[in-house]
Image (cartoon, rainbow, N blue to C red; front, top):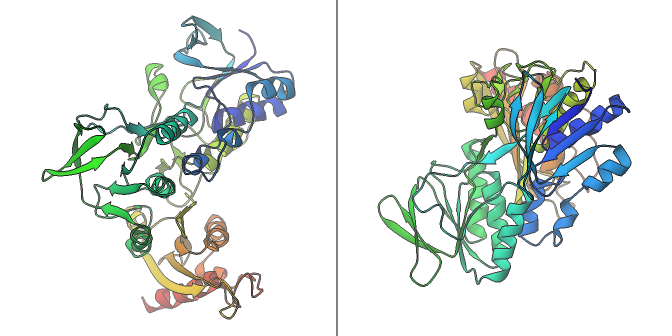
Length: 454
């Protein structure tokens, strides 16, 4: 059998795996198959491309196949879809999407990085023209072309998660009226209700209409063009376009067909070395489940940061290494109009589900010295495990200073710090940057008071 590495998927996890394998073994033949026409692009930047914050889609692309061949000696084939894995004879079946030709490519080691796919809700009429999902760069281009070529005045978004809310801002940048339909009673389930309410207020301030507890049951073409959206209770809304942003699920069809084990949450099951249940096959990125460092249980949190890290581990080990992926705590941040929001670790519900006794405290404080021009508010919620006094979660909403501070909480959680240790951190102070007592320290102090009251 040839000594070579085949990687299925050419975005975050796949190309990180290929690049790291090359560092580990300069002579190893490496072949990457990517079914779309692009590799190594910033999919998290797609809402900003749609919203014209980023004008040129090429700004999102980091490397090309030509670069990878010339600079890294990695053979990358775009518009090539792997349609089967033969684990006994160790080859993948590949379809050239341009020519329709299929061929078998032997492998010595294999990394599966097939990512995730958008969840397409099973709603009658979902296949009508003008209804989109957003997962890859081609999706973003299609949406942008539709906006540029059509007279879009009204748009609807299904789902009020991070992507749905970022898309709401993007569409408002075009001057479009936006309705968001969310089946749950609240937005952003990762964040507890006190802070998600601040984001709802920001949506209202920017003329985005939010319909919670609302289920869309049908789409119909309108007589004069566009769509009719019918919700439960037979309420009807007009839209020129719809974007379904109800979430993603791991793309595991290839692995399942090859009898590679999947986990309880639907992703490919991997160990701490990113090995699958099949010899000489690794998996990384949004197609896998990962390990939560707080609960010590599997979790499915598809993030680009995680995909890149897992890809590096899988690639190094596929090239003969033996390194470990320690797991995640699920740190996320985004901007919704003029409000930034972030979360790390567990919220109160997930902490209780994990069998912990969460104690929380909420504070509101300024991000700079109160007397300094431009000082803005930050809302912070800290979550502590009553039994250990360890910080297990934090959520924030407010100014751009949220980004710096959520990382402090993430570091504290990763280090296993107690709220008392967090309260003793020597954080930087200057009036343009932070008040003397940073919101992180104010939250920690409030958390100590809440803990000692119980």
